[in-house]
Length: 174
Ligand SMILES: [Zn+2]
Ligand SMILES: [Zn+2]
Image 1 (cartoon, rainbow, N blue to C red):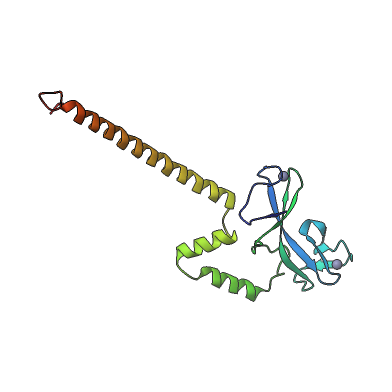
Image 2: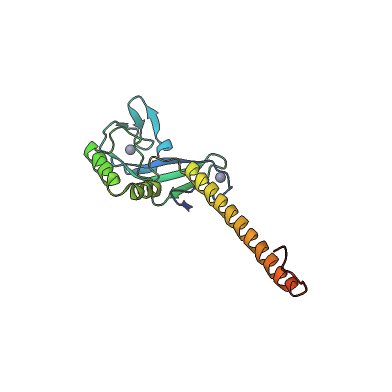
């Protein structure tokens, strides 16, 4: 099963209980699995396949993607495109790469930055942001509905007045 990076609802059961985990690749033994497959150890993780320790700055371990898991029905999903914000192991991403990413993200107008961050899921709580947008859109929709309804009732009133005017000696109230 595959989902988009900004999805927050489980496609299998509909619960909004998705948790996101980095997909790790241990190059020493070619094991690929979500972070929760790896056993927590004092200095990082222990590989479930080769039982070697994976420590901070371990270059034998890389993040190759993102896995989502529903905490309600336990369904696992591949997130596409992957969320790039994960840093499960301190320094697993070289610092200069982090700086480069920060520079790239800081480029462009604030609006473009926001759009880019939103797309990448960085620095915002996606579900909250989506709810906020949803609220605004429905508020705007409600307002448009009100304006349209008012305009329609005025139109109806005006055409009724015009028809009635023919039967009157004076204009309606004027
Ligand atoms: Zn589910
Ligand atoms: Zn391993």
